[in-house]
Image (cartoon, rainbow, N blue to C red):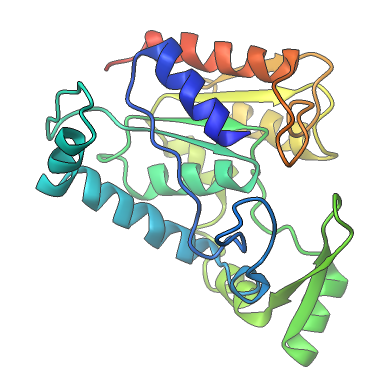
Length: 243
């Protein structure tokens, strides 16, 4: 759904909107299936932070301005231009983490059905990673087993305090919008409630009768009322924050 979401946010908010895939998210040239499972197996949160770092470095560089010109995009490139991060599910956690680690770089965060507890592994998966170096997670859509390597667990265990998003939000100072379906995955809304308790300045919007993907399917078959509501809520929130 994200190419569509990016286009709609750009159109409705009037802001330049960039969409990207993480290098190790497991989706390669196909753009619609997990054709790089060995990359998925080592996709730590730290790797995702490094990807966002590269993206910010590019946006703040002269190369970005040259790209704007080459694409004939009407946009004022200024060093102080506000940058907002939007992430869905695990991407919400990665966006929050980056903002917490780089409060001067990020102007605000939008989390769609976002992860708040970054440790998503079961005890069985952890034990398998420790014993054999590899476990697996079942793709709910395709039923395929996707590998999980021990390096992912090591990343979590080495960054326990850093990855404690709910606790760290007590000291946050950036604008935050949570957009969440009323029928999101088990435990996700409870995590959002805990986050709001620690950071009352955040805005939490519930989309009624919406699931984890706002009732869209993959590959994308078109928009839904729930997705439109999420886009509209996000665009409206952006209109009320510095551009």
